[in-house]
Length: 285
Image 1 (cartoon, rainbow, N blue to C red):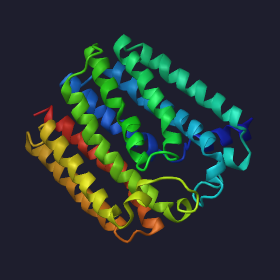
Image 2 (image 1 turned 120 degrees about the horizontal axis):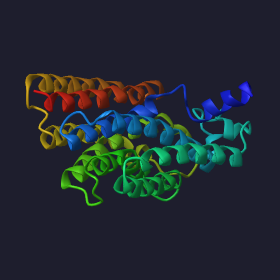
Image 3 (image 1 turned 90 degrees about the vertical axis):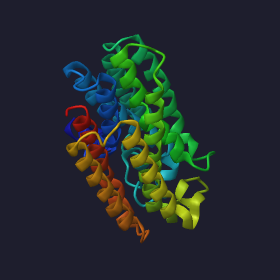
Image 4 (image 1 turned 135 degrees about the vertical axis):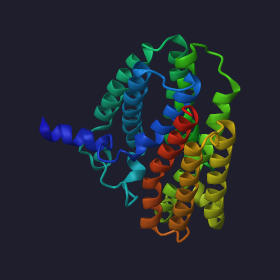
């Protein structure tokens, strides 16, 4: 039993929290914006736990969809579904249980957020197959990884129709996902080029670093303007720290080395946290 649990923890990337943190910070930012400040313990716990559960479920689905691809990629060759340690049906069952737990949480927030969670699930299910058909599959991931934003607005406001700010935040966050997931794709470029799949790193070619830089700029400028993140000295300081982090991340990926690009991807959750702190500070003068 203990050995099986260890495999399940490996399946959901328990030792790599960067994945769910990348989902969490924009979702928390949206909660603070929608609520005009502290959103309350109930919504905070629902979205924190729900984020962890859905990211874990997504890993299960992704590994089953990519099991015949992952074995040819250095970074993913030892994943438990690919190696046969966890059967595809078993992985899907684990993912379904986790998704149902997340759905049970969102049910406590009302009908509007519940309805949007169904849309979020459909987008998440589509992503693993996007790389087979879409030149920039990272854009599909960007929508999936940003859908906590409209769900947060729906949970706070209780309305199915969402304000334009929710969608504008999603668009800005999409630029951030494109930035860090392109860096992630740069890690596997040498493997992916032989597999016939699509990634932004392959599609963009020598313009990959410039594209990542442009996406970071769009993310920082759009959120700073949309959310009034220069409202006071504390939020200004957070924005400055975020800008400095972007400079550091770009310095890492400019060499395009596998290790540097993977490190840059793993550090991105700190950027998301810094922007969330800017949001919190701007709502608490």
